[in-house]
Image (tube, rainbow, N blue to C red; front, side):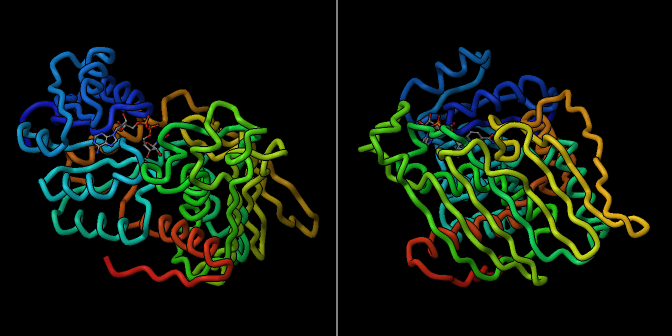
Length: 365
Ligand SMILES: NC(=O)c1ccc[n+]([C@@H]2O[C@H](COP(=O)([O-])OP(=O)(O)OC[C@H]3O[C@@H](n4cnc5c(N)ncnc54)[C@H](O)[C@@H]3O)[C@@H](O)[C@H]2O)c1
């Protein structure tokens, strides 16, 4: 470990790297010393724009890993390159904060988690909504046991028109569309609250009607649209829990509604602040939390007061990672756990392609 601030490299200096730049500027325990982007000149321009004038710029991340004595890296490239870049960085002895979704396939996610274990390095995955105090309140309520035996959960989200373009609709770069891009947040919200039970089976459907239609073109090219813009799934989780999931980049509806947890003693309904994808960088957070329970024989609704949030979730995610690296702590959002999120997504896509229910089998890490 270097003396002074941790030496950080950012790999992938596109859209979300700006959030990393802001975070690292605000965290005195870390200093960005290396920037890398596969497009020549892009990392250097980013460094200048974001004020990292002393950071060295690279086109090949392996050159950066060889030349700079980095402590840790942020991987903010498109989804399809998360696995091989993360594994190379871990093998080079660097701690890694990798963006969501963790990978494209379940095998990739497993290999990433195994690489972190072998290298004895932190692998944390970018789910910043976990730093939202209201998300934390939802998890605490679910974990408290107040709901009794939880048997059914619904989650998901949708934008009426929120189709991204660029690398997000190109299968080679993104790997998949809405199901993983924003769906991974909804899945993390529900599964994290439940304590990440093992997923067992899934039956799912996906569609690409909006993306492929010139009628709804809002900036992307329908000819270039290669991923799904809608997905729905019924997932069986260990512990006799059924999770119903739906997600949409575009639809003829304002919102996919609440995330809710049904238990034998109480139910918990959480409505989204915006249209609701549960707090991805651009989608807003929690709008309300209500507990439905019986009190002295009366059907009662208790509104849980929302906590104010006057800090940047993304910056907190990065700070927590940096402090874990500095202090030799555990991964704040462990890759090993997020393998289960990826296993659900992998199952959804397999089931949608086959048109029938599939098993989810997660290899040992
Ligand atoms: N946590 C969040 O809130 C959040 C928000 C948006 C995006 N993301 C995730 O961040 C990742 C990147 O998204 P984005 O919007 O910044 O995409 P982007 O396309 O704007 O940027 C990605 C950058 O990575 C570069 N790149 C691609 N392959 C590379 C390689 N092998 N080596 C070095 N650079 C490479 C590209 O040239 C590009 O500049 C995605 O996985 C996305 O899901 C997370």
